[in-house]
Image 1 (cartoon, rainbow, N blue to C red):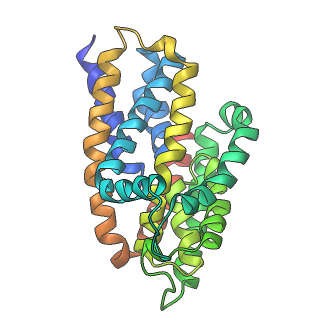
Image 2: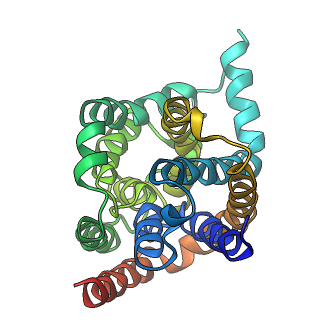
Length: 274
């Protein structure tokens, strides 16, 4: 194992952890950083490099579970108990309503997306289009949100946010960018939209990551394990910091700074790559 390769793995873990839940597209950053700079497929095979990216994404998912551990405990308790529940409380049915559109569409177009959309040029397009949606959310948001907390979300809102989440199947668009923007346009506060986005991300990312790992289990070799472990731990730690920071600032700064950053990044990518 080369030290320089381990450093590259740690950098990729940092990029994943810092960008997974901010509305700036972690997939876009991973493709840009890896394709233009680190080239992880040079020390991991092409397929092992793709599997590595799934592993570090699992690190970010674990960070969400830690941050929202009490919420997940309540969700499982509500699912397994027959006790009456408050009318206003986030339930698994809300999460399922939000997940359904992207899951169905993703299953139909998974192969097409993997073969044709994971490139620097398509990421640039996603970064730009996602920025426009975020700017629209800031411009046309309700001044007095109807949904102040995640427990106030309706099933109709959850399903509509799920429809908007389908945009994030295009790499670079950003899952959190699309769902937070959609939630805000539907009358949610920035914090309630962000909370719902992060909680909803856990099952969909676990499902997608689990399927990918099952397909590529043969790449978990002793030679690759140190890279996978280092990337997983790094992504977990930096995702913890990123999530807590983002939840503290989103209500204050809104989405515009992130939209501007995405446009600047897209311009830089096109200048460098093309």
